[in-house]
Each structure stands twice: as structure tokens, then as C-alpha cells.
Amino acid sequence: MKTNHDIKLGVSLYSYQDNYYFHKHDLEGCLAAAAGSGAEGIEIFPEMMIPEWPYISDAFLDKYYGWMERYGLETVCVDHFADRAMHKNKQLTDDELLERSVWYIKAAKKLGATHIRLLHSAHLGKLLTIPGQKPIDLVNPEITGRLLPYCAEYGIVLALECHAPTSVDDPVQQAYLEVADKLGLSKYIGLQVDFSSYEYCMSTADVGMFSRQGINRECLEYIREKQREAYFAGKDFVFEEIEPELKKMGFTDNDKRAIQHVFSLRQRRPASYEKLKEYASKVVYVHGKFYDIDENGQVDNMDYPKIIKALQEGGYKGYICSEFEGNRRMNDAGWCDEIEYVRKHQELMRKCLGYEK
Image 1 (spheres, helix red, strand yellow):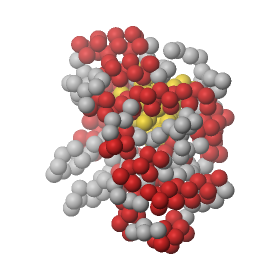
Image 2 (image 1 turned 45 degrees about the vertical axis):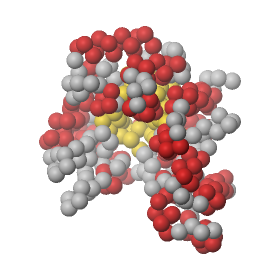
Image 3 (image 1 turned 180 degrees about the vertical axis):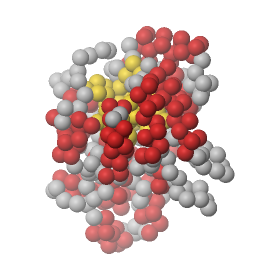
Image 4 (image 1 turned 90 degrees about the vertical axis):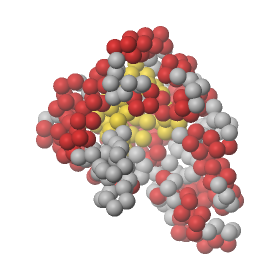
């Protein structure tokens, strides 16, 4: 369904990971599902979905382009995990990681993509370690500087994911843009917004998952309620302020450790909508992250209208791709209908963008 809108809608095929892994849908089935949701483009995960990866055969390309034409889709982005820790006993050297990254640039060109989502050090690198070794450094600014000439050669743009707990104005992102400025290659790199930066409370999917793991649901609901209260009052959420009351309810230190990875617990309030508007001209790609859709067709832990308004008013032109991660929070309770969740999410985004009344 081709449109002339400045902001177009797509689907990250990551959203269909269980359907693909459990062989309910092959790659063509995932493309058909994306098109059926009303999407115009897709983000593809080559390690997961291209049989010969890191090679791409002409036979595969013939099938792939046939499917894309059949379903009226375009390849927006190729995902690059920059897996420096792919071996058990060593980390890839900078040269090896550069060589691997060039594969993705060439693959993106073959697949007709315009962007690569780059998993870089400012995103997750310092959270990953191999016992006995230093924290894993992913694609850092120095490697990025060496990679950009290849982007220029093949016409591919690097999308630096700004994922919770970081945001578009975080200094760690700017170091990458400064390297590109010095090389005169700024047109081949930009920011990728991930809506996780704008979470203001735990999702209902989080509450359900943690309660099934044995954490008192009343405590989880209390945390979520206090997060919502803080957001709508324009205040910081400070977990320590509600901890005494939680302990009276039976909340333990082990419970706290179990849920501390939830992004909304690490940030006192969502990232700034004003900063998003200010930096929108540097944004080249967007992940519309979500974990659940409530009975009113809304995402229950992010302010979608404000996020999308900031992007529109800031002049963003490009794709927002649905990225469903509720599957990872719901599948312990039974099959999660990823296709229906994505369909509802596409409907919500069309409404927020003003494409449907």
C-alpha cells in the first residue's frame, strides 16, 4: 500500500520472531503478514532469515524481489548485531568487526535497503561481558569512521539506535556523528529513535511476566501505578521513595533484582519530547517499540501521540517500523499472536499520524 506521506509505516520482522522460529511462517509468510497489516516497508534480520548468510545467492534474491513486488513492500533496513562476542573464547578484533560490518553494507545494497541498524557501543556494549575479559566494545566511533567510506561507496546510511536508557541528545551518540562530520560523510549516518526511551511505566506485559515468575502482582501493580502518577504529574519517578511501602507488601531485594532491567525503572522520567523534536532532522529511522495493546487500542506505557507529534513537528521524514517485543514477555503463558498485535499497532500509528480518522 504505497502512500505519499512524509512518515511511512513498516514492520521490523523481529516482531514475528516466534512465528518464524516455530515455523508457523517462513520469510514469505512474514512479508505477507507485514503487508496485510498495511505496512509499506520492512526491516530484515539476515542471520535469522537468509539461509546462506553471510552469502546471498542469486536464487534467493530472485525469490526475495518477487515476494517484495507481490506484496508491495520495500526493504527499509537491514539489522546488524555487530557480534564481537560471536566466539566463546575470544572477541573479534577491530579489523574483523570492520570486515563483518562491510558484509552487512554489501548485503543491504543487494537487498535494496537504504539503511543498516547499527548495534553500537553506546547502545548495549558495556552491558555485555565475557568472564575474565574487558566489557565488550561493539562498533565504536573509530570503527564507524573506517566504515563510513564503504557506506558512501554503496549508498547505505548507518542508523545509530538510541535505545533506552539513552536518547537522541545523549553525548554518547554525538561522538559518532562528530566522526562523520570530520570525514565529510554526515549524509551516511544518523540517529535511530527507539520508542523504549519514552517508556513512563512498566507495561502490562511486564506485570504479567513478572507475576508468573513469582513476584507479588499487587506490588507490581503498585509500582506501575506510582510510575503513571509521576508521569502525569510531570514529576520524576524515584523508586527509592516507594520502596518502604513495597517492603510492607512483601517485596524483597530478590524481587527488585529480578525486575531491575526494566527500562522504566532505570530512568526517572521518559526522554524529552522537546529534544526529540529538536533532533528530528538528524533522525534517519525509527523503531515503534511496543509490548502490549490495551482494550482501547493504545500502547499502555508510552505516550504515542506525544512521541509522534514531536517527530512530525521536528520534520522527520522516513519510516517508523513496528517492533513488537511483547512476545518475549507473553510466550511463557502460551502462544502470542504476533501478527494480530502488529496489525493493531499499525492501526494505532496510522491514527496518531492522522492517516485515519
